[in-house]
Image (cartoon, rainbow, N blue to C red; front, top):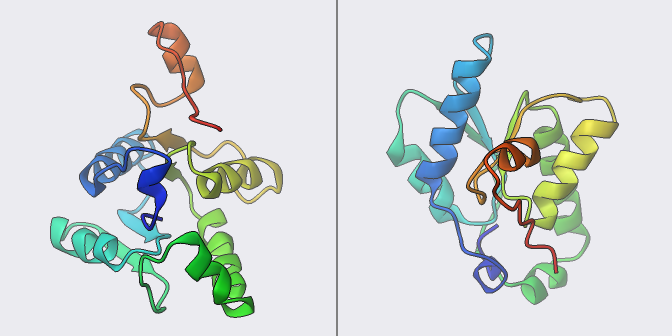
Length: 148
């Protein structure tokens, strides 16, 4: 979600997500070059379509306005149902890329690891100088979740 996310953290360009996706595909040769985008920003989807032709880009068809939190809340039950659908689709993915400074991505990571859709699937945090807590420890980096 871009929306007002820039108030909480530095936004990560799509190209960095794509680099992380390539790392996962290189590591797990059985994965297809397919990306499910969970976003509230149409520009992210357009950017994804323009950046690469070798990847299949999948996303839900919905009205996206890059709204702030208050505007999203005003949409009520319809927004909740769309978000639950996107959450279910994200949990069915073979790997995840996001920023753990995002509540949405933390939710995906935690549910993926606990409800059995994909426990043990790779998750790359593109907001960090390393891809996991363990890798950060090995490199003597502080793994900053940005949680406030």
